[in-house]
Length: 297
Image (cartoon, rainbow, N blue to C red; front, side, top):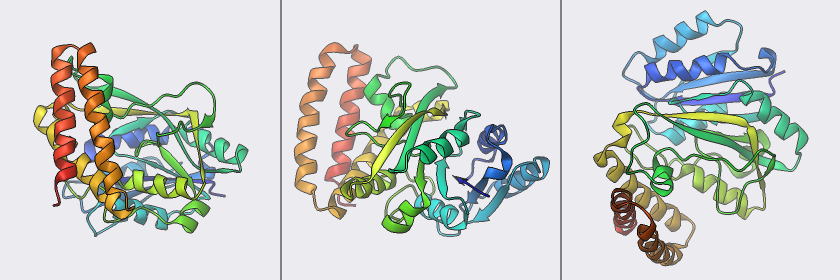
């Protein structure tokens, strides 16, 4: 019986995907209790061939490749969910590796917490070329989104949601409240997002509980190209655009503007306690996010 389905959406990252799949194949949970569904979202590299070869080399696990022709991360994840069979659904990305107890942790969490509609785990950033000096805790979040809330199972802290590359849902949850909004999320190389925030906002509004489990550990691998000023500026700008889009969907644009003003005040205060390089990047982050929020494109 398939208890949990592990969904991986991928786009033109065949080499990095193999690292992710290597950690998937090392899971401690009985192979008969879970499956892995890889969704190829129009990759132009050798993703399909690489996944098929990996599956052939690991017949002990249930690994399937499906294709989603509509470009976009939300489309790909929704395709993976629709193609899966488990009563629980865990979603990871193609630029990470997971601990060997990852699948077992989520099965145990949902089995032991019948009120859990969703869940998330630990995210640890791994920098291939080291953590840069300009990075502070706040400017790290858009890039790596590290997450750790202690060593015990608990409800997710107020104001925080699971990371997109380490989250899980009951199938009943998506059947009742829907999947990812396809007007949000990354499309190809575009850095827009917000689909996870939108989903968890809907669940919170419905009073559904989200739990944190420390046993589900994910290592987010950050390559040097994600540490350039150009990438960071684009990412922050598109974060703002995504926030504006979600605010429009949920009818709270005025609240978004008010919240941004408060964040500017906090940013300027925080600059007083950071080194100059960190302060410059922090102000740049806030500026680009604000520009994205003000954009109507």
